[in-house]
Length: 357
Image (cartoon, rainbow, N blue to C red; front, side, top):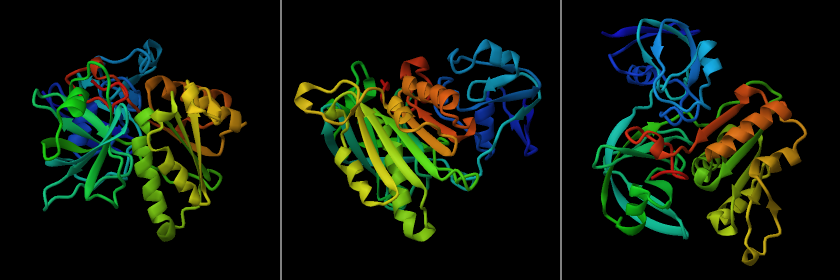
């Protein structure tokens, strides 16, 4: 039987069908809750069960600990109502009115920008456009019923082609197809836009600076966000200081470093590339080490900042823990998009590609 869910503090009421997760029910009825991976790995959708019972579903123990369950927390992307519920979480108004669509598209261009990174440009039918927020992602629908999620790297104002950044990983069924078999004019289908990784307004006057933190192809949604901000500068007088820290192993892994460096023509933007394992042939004279530690070296406090982190789970987790524990970053000022392994739940969506298979 269906179960009623009341969302606090908004008071919105929705109904969950049998077997449907809290997040699925909310999205179906037009209420946007924070979420990322949708497979219980990232923890972005964590909220409180104030009243009622749920099946917690399959999830990472790091994303939801036993102690958090005892205190009433659940991951809404996994939790299935077993009774009527009252839950507590912050709804996101920015996506209201944006329709999630399933559309066909044609591969317009394939560009190998690094030995293991392909930029895929997709063209929609002539009578279609995809409305989305900079930073969101789409699910590519595979013939076997599985999905592979990729962030949109193009900004919303430049939507003639949808751009995806795909990294090739050994054993990856979809990425193996991308790198070895995909051709221009191939037809794909996708669902989107999805996700809650997009720029928030400053909650107070002191929160004037933004730090973007990317590892690998976590650069893709940040590229979308920054290009849209630069486009809007004259219209909205966006003057918050922005710094991009982009971490990778070798110089080749910073596959669009020249583009990121060119954005420094904007007075309020700076770019800090960081390599963890530079090759001797890289002749690297820049920053080295872990990318989030470079931020900690540069900032004694992050109290008046917002942080947008995207990439490998280990990087995002370390950044959140260290920034909130040792640099005074408010927990509600950290926004993340975790690229989780597809093998963690092959039948559901997996966010983007550093571990996509």
